[in-house]
Amino acid sequence: MRRPDISLILATVGRTDELGRLFESLAGQTYSNFEVVVVDQNDDDRLLSHLERARYLGIAVKHLKHHPANLAAARNAGIDAAKGKWLGFPDDDCWYDARLLERLAVRFNRPDKPTGLIVRWVEQDEQPLSAASLSWERSRAFRDIPVSSITLFCHRALFKEIGGFDARLGVGQWFGAGEETDFVLRALGAGAQFAYEPLAEVHHAINPEKPQATRQARLAVRHRARGTGALYAKHRLPAWVIARGLAAPLLRPLLKGSFGAELALGFATTLGRLDGMLGWRRTKS
Image 1 (tube, one colour):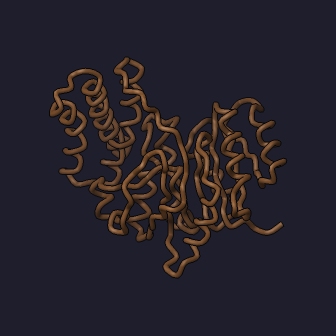
Image 2: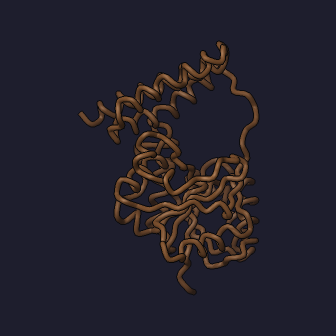
């Protein structure tokens, strides 16, 4: 069996049926030299029938168990087990355009040989990124950070150079987000070159509902915002960037005259960013 060019690290917990759509899209890829490393954080065997189905469809699947649930740590375990030259990180509820992996392979092998590629998230409908957008200077100012795990593909040598994801950040941790942004900031700071490949497309549904300012929603927003605050401290971002990040969630709704749910969630965001920044500094003291 030949060595795969691409390894897809799929860290999953709690979901089952959504994996079927992802595996169907992988089975339909026009590029076949890839593997899927499933890092299973469930306490039961709920994934086994889906993994059996994926293998029946011809997908090379490697199945790992990982406990306790920690998205960043699970991805790192998948990276260690992966054999591909390039690594990607699909969510368990996303799906790929049929030519995504083919377009990645072509782009990675062009003469400029980028360290990483950012692909287009179709439902996000973002503006095309330029090479200037994918820079340390703009990212350190929190401008145009093109980061979502589903759009990020990197050469495995990058992970050897700078390490994997910071397991203190992200889903399952007190700093409830930010592990992907942290990774890209570290990569850009180390001189990694990222390129944008808009012809490679990934799909992930976006919740169209207006946010509600329930207590649970405010706590969830504050929890995730701690990750951003941790990045302020970890990467020693400029004071003006931090001030803007703390003020903007409050100023946006106020300037629009919105004093309901949007302002309440903005307040939760600011509190979370303060939590994360101060909490990170305490862990480092």
